[in-house]
Image (cartoon, rainbow, N blue to C red; front, side):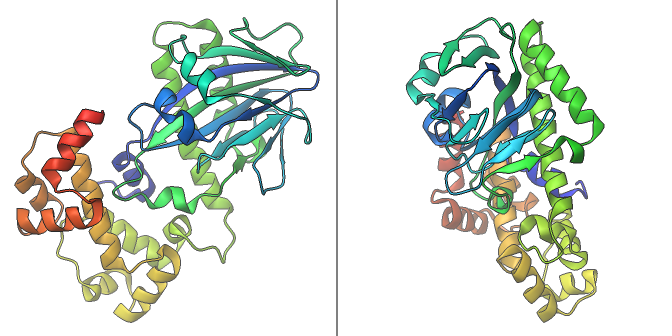
Length: 334
């Protein structure tokens, strides 16, 4: 398995992206997006958790979430709403926004995407052929879906509003935004697949750069990846989840006593290493249940359980259903 723990987790929680709107703006404008949970079934059917993102392809703007200071966006900036908060995108703070209703999102879900939209002087034009003449700013907007259950420690480790300035992004991000804008307007064959991959790459790079920017005293799952000892312990648990790990074994591998590792892991990740391992095994098992037709018994052995019964008990304790029943539910919902 990969030694890249972040990539390992993102594969297991089925990250997927989609670009939905190509938004042209001029003069004063402001748009309020509903909470992602209210529109998830329309934009990402089957996803347990939905995040919205915006790429500032041209001009400047502001992003605001209730309870946080507004963030100014320059050309090339990216903003992600990891917890799916309602938010306002605008030309300046304090402008009364045009509310985008969940009903409108559902009513337009069959319209080919990305869908051009225009905002100007408080007027909202769905389906405008964009960019509109004289657009002062352009946003490429979309969604990212992932699993929260059984186990996804990444989302909780991210802030409510994640801003990646163009100056901190790699040069390739500017090319991604340009490509996303072109694919959004040209509607060439395969555009959907290209935009999905671009959205996923953008999120991964944004999460990595957020990790790089964390202060030295930060805690949480992402900060744990960066810690010499906790990061090594996480990598080992992800690389060899089937191993019959003990705290003594793990401590020897990372170079700490069992008590020191326990305290350090708890400080960063919020749970002891063996609890983390149990949760990670169930997440891996859930992925195999959903994506393969393998027996529950063979999956149990692969993720580190001695018997199907032991895996089933642990799975039900965390998920609320036995593996076979959960698999039927997951496949029906897919």
